[in-house]
Amino acid sequence: MGIIARQSIYNVLSIALAFGIGAANMLFLYPKYPGKEFQGLVVALLANSNLIQPFISFGVQHTLIKYFSDRESKVERDRLLWFVVLFPLVILGLLFPVYSVFNDQILDFISNSNKTVLRFPVLILSIAIATAYFEIFFSWLRVHLQSVFGNFLKEVYPRLLTFTLLLFFAFQMIDLDQFIVFLILGYYIRLFIIAFYCFKVYTPSFQWKLPQGWQHMLRYSTLIFLSGAAASFILDIDKSMIFSLSTSENVAFYAVALYIAAVIEAPGRAMFQITSPLVAKALNDNDQDRLIALLKKSSLNLMIVCGFVFLVINLNLNDFYSLINQEGYATAASVVVIVSLGKYFSMSMGCLNNIISNSKYYSYVFWFSVSSAILAVILNYIFIQSNGIIGAALATLIVIVFINLCKIILVSVLFKIHPYSKKSIGIFATIFLIYGLVYWIPTLLHPILSIAVRSALIMGLFTLPMLLFRWSGDIEDVLKNIRSRLL
Image (cartoon, rainbow, N blue to C red):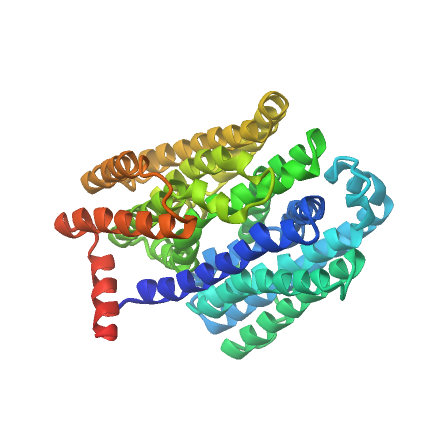
């Protein structure tokens, strides 16, 4: 089993565990104990923190992935590592005076003048700093092809932290303010853990000089920072605008729906942790055959795995919400369907995003992101006022389709490659047919029984054509390996 398959499996398991814990948080603990208003508040706070994070990291985590494999000597690699670790301190040194002077105006802008959010300015900035540095150290592990532990800390740890704090809150051991304090503390403990592990995996000798070509790196970091800021803006602007134009309860309903839809991305998130540095190496080595192989294989594998997840989620949606059994949440069921269509389209492109961001054409990402951010603001403002959270979902879908089509066209024109094949058509057709067949199966005696029956039926209907038409040798090898270990 290759390194991509092996680490992807471990990462999928971590993300599956993370989503399980997160589901308990989002679907049960939050609604039952602190309530929808508290849930909407925390989601809004973390969303605002994510809007600030790119300004601190300044894209250097992506710079490390792009340029590390291109450094020929240990000295140059060490200089690059220290550069990406120390550069955000320079950014913080420049931003802190600005933040201190314009603190009220900045917080008022990112919080949409919400007074409850403004009570916790420390959380917004503190978690933004901790998350920015965590991403830098996680990239440190990824370039050394050690993504499993970092992925666990990225996906499982914060959800487990929230789970623990919600239990403390449920038993009245902490109040809202203490919840926020311990949440911040937990994020910094995670940062110290990954930093320690990074230096254990690889300890660079300290270098006083800047790495060669640092001007190009800085330009790359700047454009990736701007692209990342726009991307973060796109991801969180809908929740922030719902909070501003609607109610905190609707933020909670929408956040839960997005959480359910985001499960579709789990296999992709696991795979990209390891494919990103491999794509960067293929580009640096000018290995076109390896690049095409990575794109085609990642696209097919994600279409299969994410397609199966797409069917399980959307065909069991009503029963999922019956299990939640909380007033109001089921009103966002359509949000799951709409957003999950966009998520699946994104996953079907495989590692195409990695190819663009690690190539010499990375500047296009900035223009795509800015255009999408502007489009997101306009569409969310129009659709939320007329259609509420369903309008926000439609805006999200339109933005996803727009930016992904732009990327596909770009890669087709500049690299003369694309992620799809004849097998892709078969996978799409199979998903469509299975959805049409299973959709009409009614709820049985209990939602759990219905979910189990439908999921088993989906697995059987999906596995048969996959093996018959030999869609993916990689997935077949994984299934054979699992079977040999169980027998």
